[in-house]
Length: 83
Length: 166
Image 1 (cartoon, helix red, strand yellow):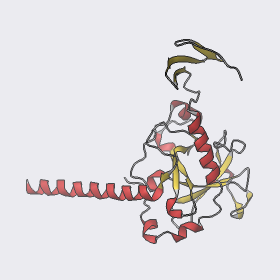
Image 2 (tube, chains in turn brown, red; image 1 turned 180 degrees about the vertical axis):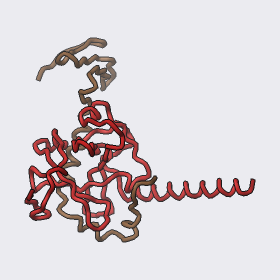
Image 3 (cartoon, one colour; image 1 turned 90 degrees about the vertical axis):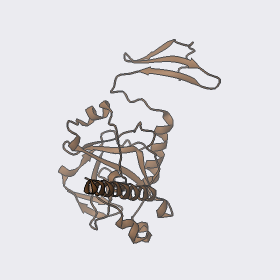
Image 4 (cartoon, one colour; image 1 turned 90 degrees about the horizontal axis):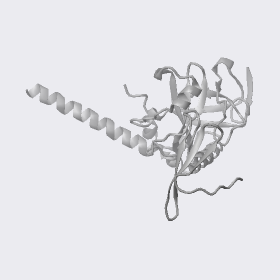
């Protein structure tokens, strides 16, 4: 892993198009600005991780039999798209 | 085309109906081809069965079948990736998780599946709407939806009355 030291307002460039700027430093957090083409996906890592975890959890479902135990009136409340 | 699956045994699939998630799903980036199995019983739940791995399948649901509204802003990058031209071509699904107590089942609204029905390309996108939870409780959303529908019906009724009186 490359570790760089930067001061406020100093930048890093990744490839030719992704620019990262250190906007502000707080007590225990930093604010980072990212300039990237719209085709580059930028997300907080936790969100990514959480969705991955949720996908893995969802993949464990073997059948929908458990839903048969739900009260029938609940199932009836599922509707089609409202117009 | 025959496909051997863990959950449904050997099934017949139509190759033209395959949806390609060329990046896979988050955490499952090695598999790309999926088929949507529709329920026979009118249930809103469907299966997203993986074609590349017969053991892999997800329960999916259209958000609007249990929510009053689901506003997703599709990023330009995602629209370009999917080759989306018209809003009508968008099909949205949320992946469902069912814990031990099925009443606690949730839908992942933060990582919805966006499919271009025309090109049959799909992508699991990440919603930037902070209201969209990874674990949205389906039954609670349904109650909220019923309540919203009741409110709309009431307001229509009362505005109808006012017009009648005037």
